[in-house]
Length: 104
Image 1: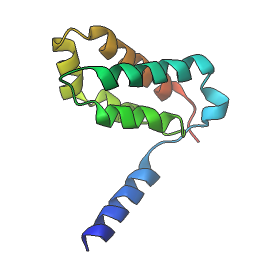
Image 2: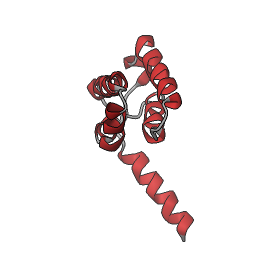
Image 3: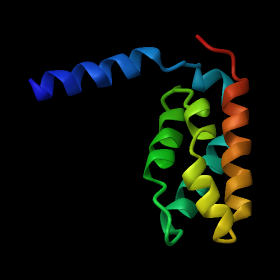
Image 4: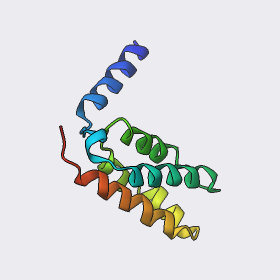
């Protein structure tokens, strides 16, 4: 029973996540910014950024997790308090860019 619940939860989340055409809308500069941000978050100490990293990877498949990224208050506050304001600014800027894309 647990597996079926997990499977349907994942399927529902997948179906409810807004999508965009990454090939038409995301330019190479944005892709590079996302990869650089993922790299920076991966090596940042004392922060658990795995959820945001997964959401950023999702953008390469055309998933718009921007609302979920904006709601990551604990991570954003932790980064801000740790002197990583530039990472917070970059996370929010990329999420804002993705949010602006026309949805399918």
